Length: 60
Length: 247
Image (cartoon, rainbow over the protein chains, first blue to last red):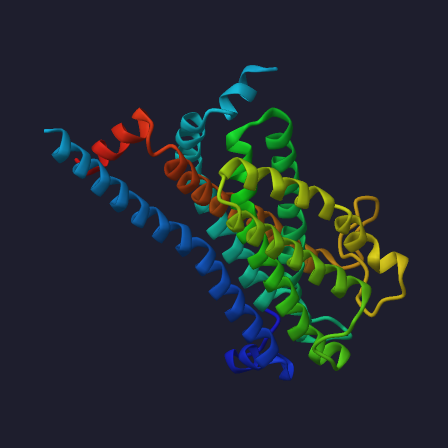
C-alpha cells in the first residue's frame, strides 16, 4: 500500500479531483462502449423476430 | 489461400466463433482491468516529481495506445475488404471506428486532466496532442462518411480509402515526441530499452494495456455480431437462429 489511510488515498496528495475524475470518466466511457452494442442487439433481435412473425402471418 | 482465410470470410462462421470467444475475453478484460487499476491507484509508489497525479497514466497510456492500435486494425481490415471484397472485413472496419473514437476521446480527456496539475494547462498545441486530436477527427470522419453513403459496399470502400490515407498520422503520433521539442513526455515503453520506471510502476501499466486489448476485443466482437446479424438477416441461418431464440 502506498497510502497510510483511506482519506489519504482519496486525497491523492492534493490531486484527488484530477485522478478520480479521470477514472470516473474512464468508467463511464467504457460502460457506454459495452452497453451500447448490447442494447443494439436486443433491439435488432426484437425487430427481426417481429418481421419473421409478420412474414409467417402473411404466408399462412 | 489457407482454409482459415475462407472461414474468416464467412459471416456465419465468424458469428459462431466470436460467440465462443466472447466470455473468455470478457472475464480476462474485467480481471486485468480491475487488478491493474487497484494496483496502479493504491499500490504503485508515487512519482518523485509528479506525486500522485501520475496515477492517471494507468488510464491515459493504455487508451492512447488503443486509439492507435484500433486505427491500425480498422485500416488493415478496410484494406482486406478493398482487395479481397471480403464482407466480414468491411464489418470489422466499420465496428472499429466508434470504439477507437471513444478511446481517443478518453486519451485526450485524461491527458487534459493530467496536464492541468503537471503543466498548468488543460491543452497546449503541442505535436503529440495535435496529432492525437487529428486521430479523433479521422475517426469521426470515417463514422460520418460511413453513415452518409447509402450503399453498404460503396460506404465500406470509401471509408477504407479514408482510413488508409489517414494512416500517415500514426507514425506522426508515435515519433512526435522525438521529432519535435514537445511538452509531452517521451514514450513509457520502448521495444529496445528497459522502461525508465521501476517494475512496481510499469507492471500494472502493462496489465492495463493487455486488459484494454481484451476490452477492445470484447466490444469489437459485440459490434461485429450485431453487424453480421443485421446484414445477414435475410439468410436462412439467421432465420433459424431467430426461431431458436424465440424458443
